[in-house]
Image (cartoon, rainbow, N blue to C red):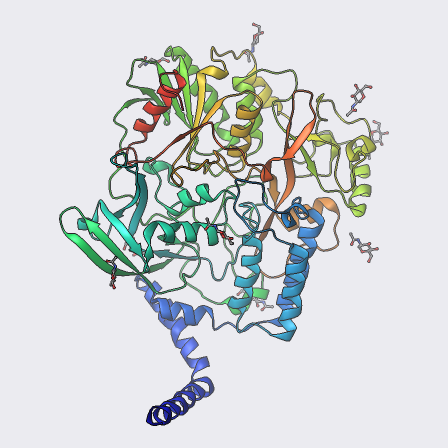
Length: 620
Ligand SMILES: *[C@@H]1O[C@H](CO)[C@@H](O)[C@H](O)[C@H]1NC(C)=O
Ligand SMILES: *[C@@H]1O[C@H](CO)[C@@H](O)[C@H](O)[C@H]1NC(C)=O
Ligand SMILES: *[C@@H]1O[C@H](CO)[C@@H](O)[C@H](O)[C@H]1NC(C)=O
Ligand SMILES: *[C@@H]1O[C@H](CO)[C@@H](O)[C@H](O)[C@H]1NC(C)=O
Ligand SMILES: *[C@@H]1O[C@H](CO)[C@@H](O)[C@H](O)[C@H]1NC(C)=O
Ligand SMILES: *[C@@H]1O[C@H](CO)[C@@H](O)[C@H](O)[C@H]1NC(C)=O
Ligand SMILES: *[C@@H]1O[C@H](CO)[C@@H](O)[C@H](O)[C@H]1NC(C)=O
Ligand SMILES: *[C@@H]1O[C@H](CO)[C@@H](O)[C@H](O)[C@H]1NC(C)=O
Ligand SMILES: *[C@@H]1O[C@H](CO)[C@@H](O)[C@H](O)[C@H]1NC(C)=O
């Protein structure tokens, strides 16, 4: 009885308190919170988690803007997103993700906006973003310019090693940039969960950039790469979305100190981009309110992930070193210090402007008498798709274009546009003009289209097969008189799975068509793993596609850019029969290596292993 009485009093008190809060405080606490955020940023100090959370959640839900946004997102995805139907199906064996029925989920979000309106604009944006995230397609997302410009940093680097002693038992090792006495401690628990499980769960649930859980696992952790290559990694300790909790607890076992427990708060900073901090998400409707250099997602064909590129905070404490290879001039070119005359070319992105340098690098390796080549394409977020055809053509000559067949979606309203483009006299169509038959060659013979109906083909809602792209006159010139001594057997590709987009198209092509061997590094122990991720075909943004397609709906409203995959690439067999959609094909690497305490900071140790595989000294 007593307990109950006390309890009910307590309840009343609580309710009163809450009511009081609701009536009197919200507008002002929100304002105070945003002021705190703003003033911390002005002083170049870390923002308090709770202030930021309150501030983000204080911007009111705008029903009209939200409904229009969902309508536009559904319109663009259903009209152009090339995996719209495929996403509903179960994953092929090897991949880990949930099927997503975009039409159903977006329609149900739309009706919920009226029935149970979200508490804030932030809640709405997050729900929308999470639906798209489930696709695990790194090309396709809604970026929120209001809420996603903060960096959340634990100030520590986690990496996973497989120890070779005893039963080859895997363990997590922690490297701490805040307290260096935690270096090389083994992490036992994170947030009360076994450490490995915590990382796997995070990779499974939260990381969107791969359909392969092992690749996501690597993305959660720190990479084994020289500093200048750092891109997109360490997502567990370095986040772009507001974390669920203000801090994380860790339990470690350290070589000297023994058992250590600590709790680490997020260090929260703001991305560069504003001249001073003007936090006003209320102006979402006002396109001119923010003038960021990098807002309109990717109007180019570049498929690089944008938001995390600038992160410079948490880094591996140990400066990566390359002790077993000699650097040649040219930036990313090495000769291994073994007897094998093996060269290493590190390719960390695909840029047309680097094509000349790429040719020079291979020539340099040839001049130096290199017998074998390792292509290290880890942590490579992609780039220009033209680069893929250039690189494959540089290494292997072929009568047909050295690239995959692809398709785009055709709608009734795009057909007149295609016909008009075909009739037009312009011979040099814009690179982004997907509906211009003159931009493409036919698969498999590589001939230009003689009519718009040849381009449209006979399939429902899809073009006839198109080559990924054609070489420009400049590229053709660069490829003239090139001849290298290496065959497929002399080349091996090594990646940590994060070889995305244009990088994925290169490695998949070299592997599938030219039978170049592949090695994947890291991931979970004793599982197979992909060497590439989200090959897609081509990414674009609604305003660009709407313009070329002649769509009446010209963009998603508000300031938040959507990006989406509009072209899909396929594998094909010796008889040039088109086979599978690459984005949905599980292609594990031929060989597998794991990180250990040494090669996690020195990739040249991995190259030595790759060289042994390449030279058939060890089997994989
Ligand atoms: C903010 O602090 C960081 C390190 O704490 C420093 O590198 C940076 O230069 C500072 N920026 C300004 C504008 O003071
Ligand atoms: C990954 O998440 C899905 C649910 O989204 C779940 O069904 C699956 O079991 C998880 N896999 C692992 C290995 O945790
Ligand atoms: C981890 O630390 C918490 C306290 O921070 C403690 O309650 C828990 O028992 C520890 N777990 C292990 C495995 O040491
Ligand atoms: C949009 O923002 C700009 C710059 O802040 C301002 O000058 C303009 O009046 C705003 N327009 C509307 C419709 O709010
Ligand atoms: C590699 O070739 C360049 C000329 O292209 C030469 O200057 C350099 O000495 C060679 N390096 C080695 C290690 O053979
Ligand atoms: C296209 O070229 C033909 C023949 O050269 C010419 O008669 C026609 O006027 C041109 N059309 C346009 C739209 O320029
Ligand atoms: C266009 O016509 C030529 C000559 O008849 C033919 O060889 C080529 O295959 C045709 N192009 C396509 C895409 O069918
Ligand atoms: C390729 O070789 C031919 C014949 O030797 C020569 O005429 C041409 O200029 C060369 N092209 C380039 C780009 O070096
Ligand atoms: C564009 O608007 C016109 C006129 O309202 C309509 O007839 C046409 O079907 C629309 N096109 C698309 C692609 O929605």
